Image 1 (cartoon, rainbow, N blue to C red):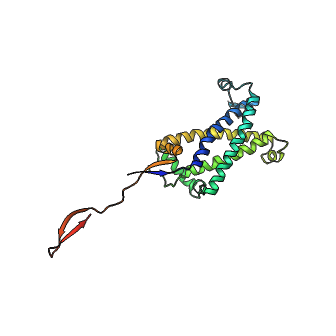
Image 2: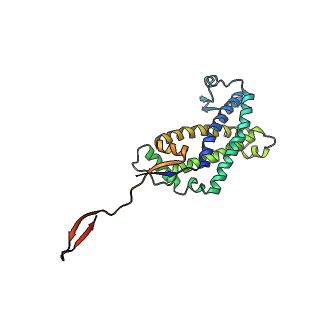
Image 3: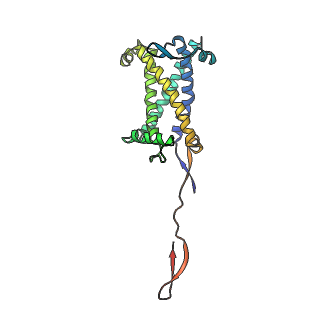
Length: 241
């Protein structure tokens, strides 16, 4: 029997979907800013394996010579990103939703079992409530990453006014590296998140839009009268299977 069950509240869905275009604009505008000084590479033993980013990427996305535009967009949508994140965290605290999101002691062990199940190495997935162990870790990590992006961004944006933030993150250059690394982390999270959504199927994706999901519920056992049986005294007894 199919039953419609509420899964995600309006506040959870609102912050989720609003954050997607905001974060997209933040990453795009950040690329416009980073173009002005793209110094980061993956270099081992003086050999550069990858340069962030090749000239072809800048040309494809029409990024060069748009530094002022990138800074304007980045600093504007930074406020929306921050306020949306604060609202989300406050909602999870006051609604008690944090209990479904914060990792438990067994989460890290079960997350490995979830991974094995997703890779079809393990047949059965570990039991879960609203979110499985891997989701608890990922969703908590993305919140920490969000706060990290805001703080490192402020340290880079106003290194004199927020000198204590620069000091906390090890100086301006290290704060910039951390800010850049968190952005790469968002991209990896986004890719993994999309793959997980595809694996979970349409019912899970629909619940993030409508707030409800369709679950299969076993019907309540009903006593069925099947046949009549006579006892030794000749009376008829009803036998229930």
